[in-house]
Length: 324
Image (cartoon, rainbow, N blue to C red; front, side, top):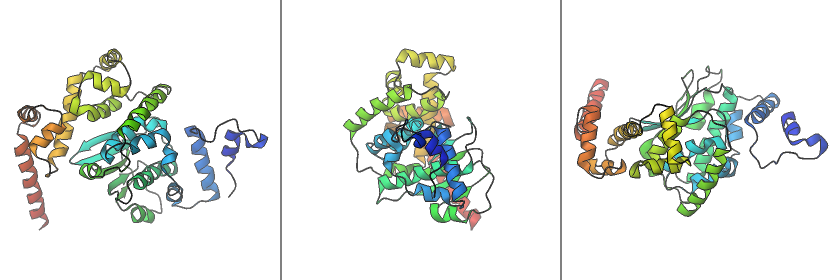
């Protein structure tokens, strides 16, 4: 296979004088062209999978080593979404927690890169995740794309081990929250994490704004929920409390309401996990007393956490009866 012409142009290969560092992040538009030029030479339906299989943690750069230093894959996923722009600066990802599942999704806010390009990105992320948790297994619930269904889709579910859907509102990868929390990272290093996080925050500041403040704020609140405060969230965002307050004011957001919305989402997800007691869930959500969590939950849902969990069991039982 010939070297794609976009590679030669970007690295000035014709003059044998590399103007761009091969170890720096390649602009998204250039990388996109390279992928399609490879496809022109090698037009196979599973090209994205073949490319992704060559991926390793170093390809994710600083964010890759940052997430390696986290305690478990759930924490790593939150950091990954927050710092993803340092890997691919196109459509920023979001993280949602619902019914015990975590959905990492990407909209077409800045346009659509094309199915092949988005496949390479998503499958590369998955391959890197598999590498860092090996020999533990990564169990995916489903993957969705907002593109039309291609002619050949046989290889998707066979290789990925989960259903793959098309014509969806967003691109998304869905994984069990309990599964992510159960996967411990053997390379946990809080000191290294603090050092890399400082560097990553500085690099983020060098990127132009992509208007995703609300998405980043939600991820930050999730991360800081056990010790939630304006100071901690501002620190995680790498901005001053004053700037955080200004951003909240400009977006017409109330910090307490944002925190409660995140707590509600997480509470519903945690209650799906029967291994967690009400007391443990209260602690995970940052409440100093279980009674405070119970009062808040009743305001949100009009029932107690315990009753909500009982209703879930009853619904599951009714669903099984219907299937019978």
